[in-house]
Amino acid sequence: MEDHTSFTACTLSYNQCRCFDRLTVDQRDFLDKNSVRIKYRKGEIICKQGGFVSHVMYMEHGLAKVFLENGSNSLVLRIVPDSNFLGLGAVSEEHSNFPYSAMAYMDSEIRQIDVRAFRTLMEENTGFMKDIIEILSSNSIQIYGRFFCFTYKQAFGRLADILLCISNRIYKSSEFDLPLSRKELAELSGMSAETVIRMLKEFNEEGLIKIDGKKIEVLDYERLKQISETG
Image (cartoon, rainbow, N blue to C red; front, side, top):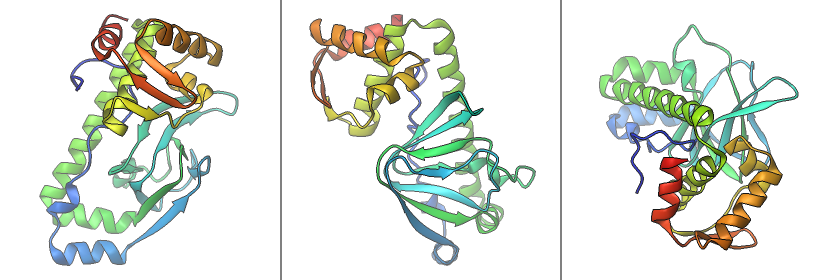
């Protein structure tokens, strides 16, 4: 598995939240009474940049992207898989609007937790609060590393990062069905769709990966990791 201390263009959160284990039985009951589970279809908007924050969202099952947009352009900040949060910035009462948008990459189920109830749990349970602060810190560090890679890594390194990211952190397997279109993959790696298609073909021809439609198999993990590190 990859070293999380190294800089990569990977956007995927790798901290699976276990903070709910910190809660007492009564606090878990309180959480259940102040939350609801919502299903989102692939491509559906989960939250909108600038929208009022009424809930903290927890990804039960699925995959979503968090991004900034200005109407004509967008920038992906990170990908949210199972057991990760959306909207944690709202735990501070000073921030009542979403600073980003989020969209489901696949059919997803999200637990929406009333933000006031979430703040109450943080005030009552210091262990729970500590875990939330660590998640916020980790998310920030990951985004810093992503921007560093976008500035200094070449295209091949960034694409290798994303492929290893999906293999290691989503599927935990060398073989997987790519949940993203070529356009979405290009968006994550900061390149054009044409460039991504060309590089995937080169990776395939060089024996780094095997492509069969949406199915991708990582054939040479070490070489792909080397490209990621030196790219």
